[in-house]
Image (cartoon, rainbow, N blue to C red):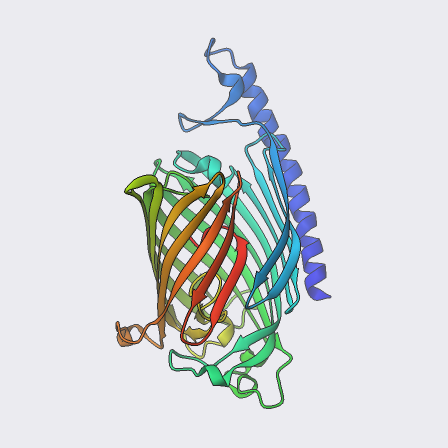
Length: 390
């Protein structure tokens, strides 16, 4: 009930904000259209930003029913909708409503101005991204903490996160972007089994609700030719997150991370090799499992169960060969590897969890439909979802 009330309040705030933005930007656009200081130019079709130009585009929308299967969530059903430039300010709305037979309840709203794809590779004075995300897992898995946790110790509990984030970005150049954001996140753990190890694991927040408010700073060099379906380019990203003891927070930590993504055609333009390296580290004392760094599942190690490994330091490597098959259909052959540690000093290259992966893709105009199967020594993971892994 508390989460429902929070969502209603946030949606009301979003609606009011959008009305204000529409009025402000509509006035700016009208002023630009009526400005006769540059006769003969295409001012009526463009928005000037720091002497660079973002083309105003026609409105567009896609509504896509979600019917999926995932070894972690079971059969899924729902709706994904994407609306582009309906307010006439190059904004986008992305809404996901999703349920599954194994108990995932995922509802996500994203408002972006300008849209991610429209600002890719452009100079812009600012962008704004608002995300409201509720992703309840009724039967979430816990195996223990650390890389040596045993699959046989698997137990189930309910994990209920609720997140609100607001990120401001600036495209300093076509390839260099800086971001500053704020985030509120609460994660409630409950419904433990009678013999649960997690129910006895300190600190006490493991059996309750972890709440924190954080500030994020991010810098990114990004030369990709597309945000949705890149075929060439390089992404180098660094990030820092600071969660101080303020505003009802009961968890305090600092998180630092970095990643490299590389895309390039090989042999033919339709064959692309894509690779990613991600490293993250947490600094804090008595951190609950709600904020530990996970690997495993749909977005990381596709041959392992969701959040199979948890700890304060994580490293991940993914590589894929992506190729065109016919019309909008494509495929991938890839490899995933990852590991976690309790501190940076224990980092090594031994005994990483690995899995090969094979998949199919269907290319929509504004997103990718993805089907992957990964094979590990513990399990086989199958994922029918949307969006490239990276």
